[in-house]
Amino acid sequence: MTNKELIQSVSQKAALSKQATEKLLESTVQIIAQTLSEGGDVKIQHFGSLEVRDHQSRIITNPRNGKQTEIPAKQVWTFKANNRLKEAVNEK
Image (cartoon, rainbow, N blue to C red):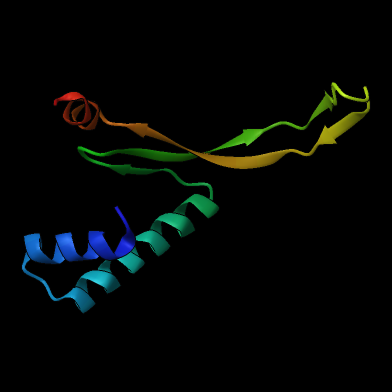
């Protein structure tokens, strides 16, 4: 589903204009991104949770030439689906 399709579906289901729905979606994504960048977690009932985890730096070896390279530490976000979402996806 593309962003445009999502906006159209939500606007129809919620009886909102496409412009209002687009602003709502953009605001939601901005708030989620800001919360994650500040180290917070986002939990959406009946959907799932987003959180940031720290990955430590590590050294890897290139199998072709044996050269070792360090991968720096970084933060990554993860998503864990709620059980209701898992069940809805698995129902066919």
